[in-house]
Length: 95
Length: 479
Image (cartoon, rainbow over all chains, first blue to last red; front, top):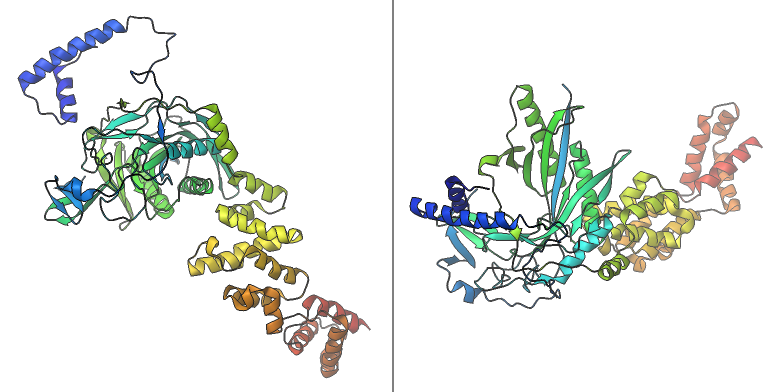
């Protein structure tokens, strides 16, 4: 798979990362290197191997369904830029 | 041209856990803003999600109830998008290997039964709430809902009318409450529907381009939104236009759907397995334990009511609207097994009607099944007429005489006169006083009979058993 400069810019936009033309070029080169590596790995026959969804071969531990957290919103909101009536205020967003 | 409407539904059910899906914060509804949003929910750096056993167990319960496959391992994925009420910048959801895969739900529209197939049901966390009232030109964010466990239930595009879609949504709504995984409160957003709607020429194989209508929080809106949307699409196609795939919003005030976002700026969610969560393994033993916990399901009860009780399919489906109502009905029948239909009629009629009128649930019904059975026994053994039974029921509802039907009947003197000799005496008196009508009847005027019955009932102040009055009067007039 070859990655284009447009792909890089699109991904950057989706991730809300502002990048310059030079940075995009550089990212394209680096990412292409990674894709080459992936291509190389894909030549290995993995037909009989079950794919792992996690790097660690362990299973998820579960919590009991009980409330353990108490209200700390005053503490959390002490570092928020703007707060009113218990709400975090953010620039207006309407879809 | 004849058009066919094709509908698939995505239903978000809020799971009835005490705590959130990945944190120990409370999920109770209606708390002050942000008082139930802990460090994990507001995504402070360095926090890690820990999966809630109760949320997984509810998903398994649902899977078993719809005959689906329970995936193990099942994996969690990040769904990436930016919105202020989603503080992590991604929602933890499932993409590949959801907990529940496949399964089906049986629906009934009129006399027709239909199977709606399910694609999948996956666990995910809810987002917070954005309040767009004016905070000096800014939006307010309440993260109490962030991290609330949801089970998103996705159907195949198997429905062909808004009526079928509503029947499916209602069947699902009944089921999730029945098995106790969701409170089903639509006003509080515990049960939210998105509908995928497309149209195609009748007989066509290929599906038309679909539009998704978001956030339908009542069955009536679901029906109206689908009807509007199908009409809109058909009009466009008949005018030679084409449908643009997009997400639309239903505006209940104007009864129309309108564009929310189109495909071009649709989100590219870039799903990938969440490295913060390991694969979820669900053992066979766990599944077996949940299976034992499952109550008799609505469909099984429906069939039992039809086959064992001899009720109509319609009556059975009304009685299983909620598990509480079905239990109430069965507890009444237990005391009066010979009068199933009488019990059904009263539960569906007087009891439900009164509950609706007062706006309370059957759990709060002031008349218990045993008390209702006592009243119905008095109807079936002829002690009181059906008409006075309604008066007695009213008194029971008010709690008079501790809700005892017998005590109320005695106190109000409502006992029917069912003694043959007493009725004969009444009839003799009436016949003596109305000799003209007796002559009329004997000369062939059938109408005179009813008039005489009326006189007798009046003389007994409505308490004579009408069946006995009829029989005895007939006999006497033939003498």
